[in-house]
Image (cartoon, rainbow, N blue to C red):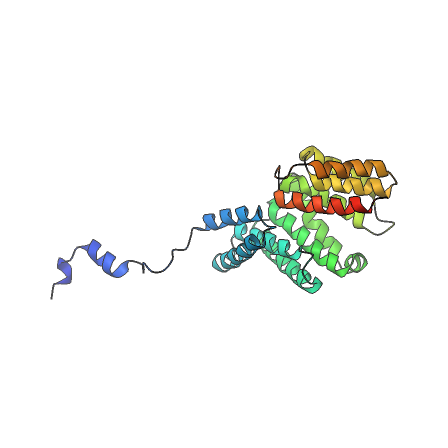
Length: 253
């Protein structure tokens, strides 16, 4: 038998301490986060969204207190909750899970816009499933406004200038007499100053114009959305807005 002391240390490490070459290596966390960002840019592809969910679930299990993991996982679940083809109960459950993940991210880092923004959008989807009046009377409004106010203060330009668009949607969805088209219009102007190509801002401007009886203005805005090329800032969002604008245009008389 060869004495252990006569065997070089490197050989011992290679023979005993080397990992099983048959086991796949876990990618660095930074690579996972980069992959989640790339998949978000293709989130209207069902396959991309399924991959994103699997990656997000695994990343949360692996790094349950990592800020970048938590807010991105919230973003994935919010995206799933925003799919109108899903059952309302499923959408509400997914939105609640997204909100909980975003709240965990906020607890880790309260000074970044991402977690605050996805918390607001996620609880907004919870409220949407409940109905506006019930949401207002059950405390959802405060849970929505507080993180959105914080996101606004931290980085109003986050997500391609969509924070003012979310505020505009809020002012437009409030029941009368709290609904405020003037405030919504001001927020949309700010959104377009941040991102002049923001199609959802144009869509909400068309909605306001139509509600106020300015049909020609609404048609012109909808035509501008239809003519806009896809891929200038967020292709899945642009495609979704184009679809909504087409449906709205078909209903104008």
